Image (cartoon, rainbow, N blue to C red; front, side, top):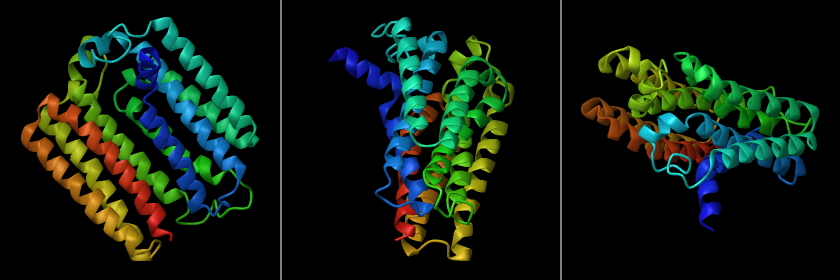
Length: 283
């Protein structure tokens, strides 16, 4: 049981669930029938790919995690490195098999996502901002996958899947920047060239603030075009944009590593609120 719990921590099960839910929301917004079996399969494939990426990334990051996240399964010794690598491989293979049951396009995208997270862990994360963009791209793809589960969808129409995809891209990019500040000590010791390691705290916070201001502006654009119902308006303003503004102000005032690390859970809640806003906005 302890090993199972450690594996759940390794793959970040909650992140996998959010990735799978993103596929469902993408399918819903693209008018894919709710009883389409391919939505189930694509959602599972996305969740498995997410778990594979997390396990492999922890395998590569074990040394920096001894400083940044010593409680995680690998640096704490609760899971062996070999087992983490096997877990990543098995989840990756099953994500491809599951995607192959849907259609060739979904299979290709899942394969590209796995390649992207592989190169991210091995190379891209060492390149300033490019690693952040790679993770943000992978995080935004579940919405696209959801729209590709059926040929008879409004895939290419606005707002469809493109609005949440754009939101997710910017959101994940900003969140990855914040995580870089939280992991600054271990990343610096591992010679990773992240933004907070190269600029002053004020410049870094200015960049983070600009990214999230862009996101807030983007969330308000649908209001002008009446793309979503009133439920979207209330959720986005009250449960996404307002907490986001307060969080940025809080980080400006504190600027402590611990505060940046603690903000991770808040960002996950904001992601869930965003999913709810899109679902409710289309009712």
